[in-house]
Length: 155
Image (tube, helix red, strand yellow):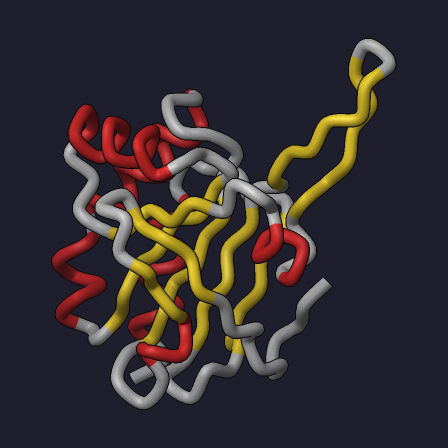
C-alpha cells in the first residue's frame, strides 16, 4: 500500500475523449485528487462520481484536479459522464496497470475463475507529486466532502 509522504507513481491513461492524461503534467501547477472506483454505472460509482462532480467547481477554485480511474473503457466513461453530468476526468485503466501501481487491484475467485476488481481508494497528491493522504477501503457516500476538507488544508 502507498503511504502519506511517498511520491505518487506517475502514469499515462486515456480519458473519455481519448486524450492522454499524465499525472506528471499537473506537477508544479495543481493538486490532484486521484480516486479509484469499481465500475461506471454501479451504485457506489454513481454516488461517488456525482458527489465529486457537485464539488468540482470548488476543487478547481482550490487549484485541484479530480481524476477518477476504473477498469472501464473510454466509451463507457463517456456515456457515464454524459448520463450523470460528471464534470471531471474519468480515466480508463483497462489493463489494470495503474491500479496495480497504486495497490488497489484485488484478485478474487468467482465460479472457479480469477477476476480482478478495484478496491475503492483515494489519493490526495500535492503540487510536488507527493501523496498527502492515502485512503483504502473507501465508502462512497460523503467521501467527496471529506476529501474537499483535506484539500482546503493544503493551501
